[in-house]
Image 1 (spheres, one colour):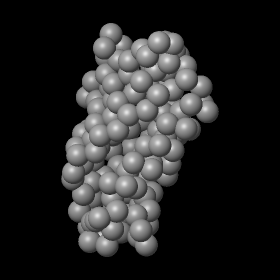
Image 2 (image 1 turned 30 degrees about the vertical axis):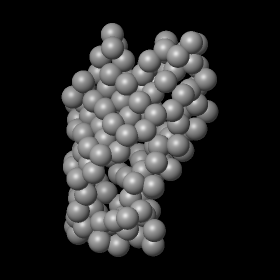
Image 3 (image 1 turned 60 degrees about the horizontal axis):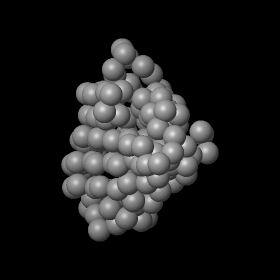
Image 4 (image 1 turned 120 degrees about the horizontal axis):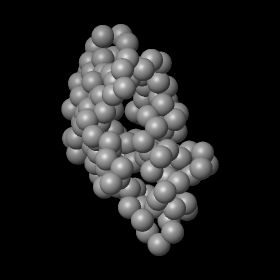
Length: 146
């Protein structure tokens, strides 16, 4: 499943990019996500809880930073997660790009996610709308952090 979205932050790029590049800090802006451990400079272990329709699912995830380019303001991550109850998982590549927008920052997100388990079986049709709501809340939390 491909999810693309974008949002604007009312702060200049030179303030937004360092936050987007700070993985533990930016993860705290994602609803239901917490970084539990930094394994090495590019690998993190996280716990993520997602509610889709009547189903709430917890994942233990590994996030690997594939690219973090301060010149182009591109961040790309590989995410692998398994449901805590062992019934499914998620595999995703997430790319964010930040750009100057006249004193504001425009952030574009592109996710290529592959989901399995109860969340797909029960909440399959709702997943994209939940992803969009989560991104909107992430944008609000990010702006509040700045």
